[in-house]
Length: 268
Image 1 (tube, rainbow, N blue to C red):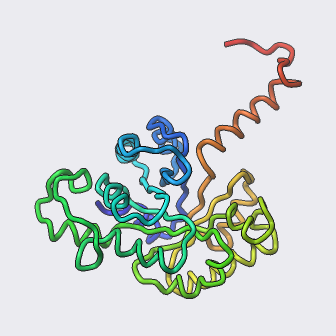
Image 2 (image 1 turned 60 degrees about the vertical axis):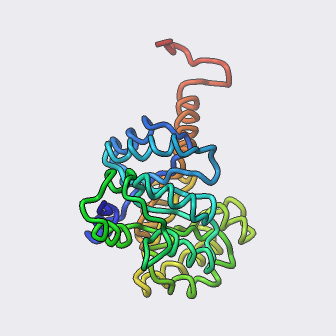
């Protein structure tokens, strides 16, 4: 399939995304209804099995939102099975030069990589009319987004950004803040800001995209600043965190103290 995110990037759009922790197809459909461009279905931190993953990717396709999958590590067998479901992109955690090079090989069919070939899978629509054309298009369109989550990766980013076959990099602020000794800090922290600036400068020079997340900073000014600085994709945290914060706002606006309703509150 052709990558809709790639097309949006080429048109100059800053794409928006959300990380899927909840694992419910309905939530994926709601993201699409809101106008979010892509969802990163999480297999690193969540108890996500292949059957549920397949339903989430189907829901994304049907609703018109691009499905990406974050795998827990570069495991060729797992990545092959995920790609066979028809995901548009692969995200890997704690990127370093070695696992970036490994994922480039794992996601592509020979001669460009080592991905095992099978014509009767969902990604081929269960039988391609021409295997060579399908494989060449799949190799060309798959998007790889390694996560930059460690100080060492930022320091070595010049080397990592030179790796061919990777479209862009996802700066993961929470793990990165821990690695930089400023746990929980956002990109308005000087250390975090310098790290993001380094990634942006090198990426633009190398023709790579940069994606990051606002985490728990649901502030328009914070998001606008990241876009102004040049990020190509903005992720609105995880669906679980967005739901938690929405629940907290509802409670703050409708309940005077824990366990007590405001005067006139109705039970509907």
